Length: 268
Ligand code: ATP
Image (tube, rainbow, N blue to C red; front, side, top):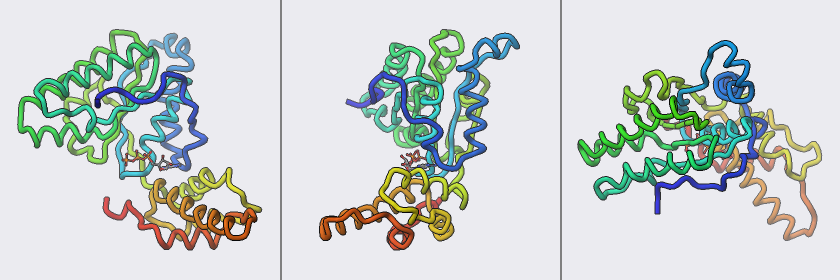
């Protein structure tokens, strides 16, 4: 129980096309992570090593996990997802072993993206156990990060936190999480794009004005927008059950659904 990365070990199929908005962030990740892995000869020629982890931070539900998964997809690599919360165990020494095991599993997979979600859980652990146990867990993570630079296993580490101010400064040193990237709450064009991603496959007859819905959903995260689409779709399914038809998704249906979803980036 706990500690092991989930998912099978095949290449990830999610790509940047599945991530709405984030134009700048995607460019940055492409340059920092994807290119060095897809064109290693170019980077070697100029003596640039691909290394160091990427720490994503920003409000919940705005696509950090999705972006990390899509980065794996862009690199054609498997994606392994580990929540720090699942690593932490009250028995002495077990958390460290779980974390080490997660890296072992990743190394056994071969080149892949290992994603550590909820990194702020480490800081939480520090407060909870007050002291050496949590310190040792951070030290294990630092050792694992430092080892990547020299072991050539092609492991790419990405991590996410909602609370960057809680992240141990030692983790931000060169070769560790030396790139810190803000994943912002979506602005209006980004919301339009996220709505496009989530409605693209649904029955509609040109009846969705994603821009109009984006304009009325300020402060909605990507996850909130997905919830809006899901609510609207639930209504369509009800209607289809009643009428036997295939009612299309439309703008009023989405706007009505948006009225009933509470924007979550409000509290950040
Ligand atoms: P948390 O901090 O709560 O872990 P997160 O930033 O990792 O949040 P995700 O788990 O990636 O957010 O987002 C949750 C879901 O919301 C995604 O699986 C996706 O369906 C939707 N979503 C969020 N952002 C986007 C986006 N930019 N484009 C498309 N879908 C998005």
